[in-house]
Amino acid sequence: MKSNTKTIITSKGSSISNALTELWRSPALIRAFASRDLYVRYAQTYLGFAWSIIQPLFGLATLFVLFNKIAGIPTDGIPFLAFALSGLIFWNYFNYVLSQSAGAIVAMQAMVKKIYLPRLSIPTAKALVGLVDYSVGLVLLIGTCLYYDISLKGLLFLPIILAGTAMGALGIGLTISAISLRYRDLQQIIPFALQLLFFLTPVAYPTSMLVSLLGKEWQWLVYLNPLAGMLELFRGFLFGTDFSTMAWLSIIITPVLLFIGLLSFVKADKKMADIV
Image 1 (cartoon, rainbow, N blue to C red):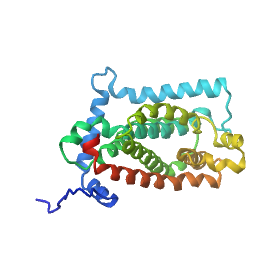
Image 2 (image 1 turned 120 degrees about the vertical axis):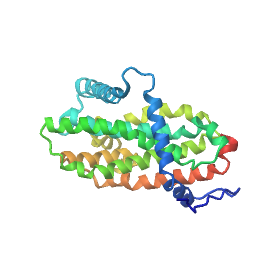
Image 3 (image 1 turned 30 degrees about the vertical axis):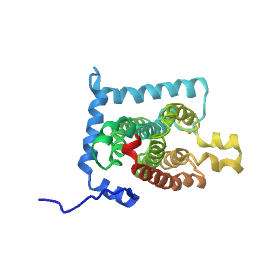
């Protein structure tokens, strides 16, 4: 059955609504990009998919040694492995989606120059690929919670936190992707910026530590980091710990970041094939 949908390309460029409509109509293209990324990721490796299990375990072991054994960071009475995993799975997903979406257009510049396609589908596919490692980490978290006899009822709120993480990461990634089309130096800064952001994000320590360092009057700065409040909320739902009402600021800011990212990307889309 033929589709009557027509795509009109003009020199005026597109709009956010048109870009999202094109994206909605291209699920097969997004799946194709995601499948390609997964294949390339594990191609010519001896362990293949096993790396999705090894990497979070190695990261967890590193956090355990540094933050628990050496630094002795308190975790509000929660077993450290469960506490750290509850933050690590979201951080790894955020880190992957942001870094991959930020460089997605530059990495596929040959295709962008030759043919027209919904370009928003290229970075969006990264959010799907990141769910593979996230799912593995989630299984490890569930197993850890069962081992420590922690109720899993809080996982009912997980989709909200995951959606917020995806929107925040994709929003920042799209903004960087649009800017780096002209200023490629930005691509070199991303790894260093993410390393710094990791230590400013309460992955292996409670948010209250950052708040105590800045003081109550400046605590809102902590929650401008979208992951800070979302991790605090998730741990509150899962472990029954207290969370600040300010944590909701991180949830509110994620759609704002996504809107800014979409706006930046759509504006850059007009001349993307010429400057990429």
